[in-house]
Image 1: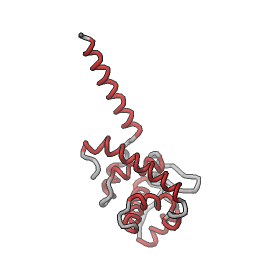
Image 2 (image 1 turned 120 degrees about the horizontal axis):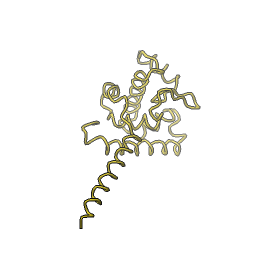
Image 3 (image 1 turned 45 degrees about the vertical axis):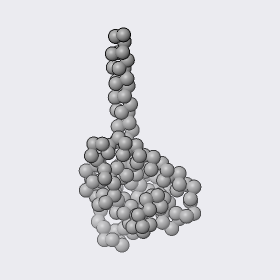
Image 4 (image 1 turned 135 degrees about the vertical axis):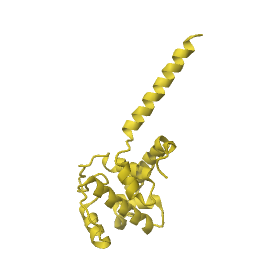
Length: 161
């Protein structure tokens, strides 16, 4: 009957290992910057978006030319700078996050708070959001799945909305 103690220890150890692996797979890097720039967007959603876009690699560059943590196209950054008088360099992590969040808030406003449509537009661009429905749906599903994991892992710590 003393074996139950070893079984309990093994189970506890296993749970700790699983939780640790999830924390490694779903990091919370740049959280202070995201929190500062979020302005109404759940920071855990932004963590999910960064994970989907760049895997938290500051120097990520896509085949299409998107740059940084939030994978902004230089043309989008230029448009944001010109239209909204923003200042910064999307090659810098903090500026990339600030521009990406500004753009996401813009898209959320454009689509009246429809998060899935805003995420699809973030991925393919507002002008092409209807043309790439399946590709955009797959992307939105990925980000929303990551978002669920982030909320599960971190919400109980008081992070996110």
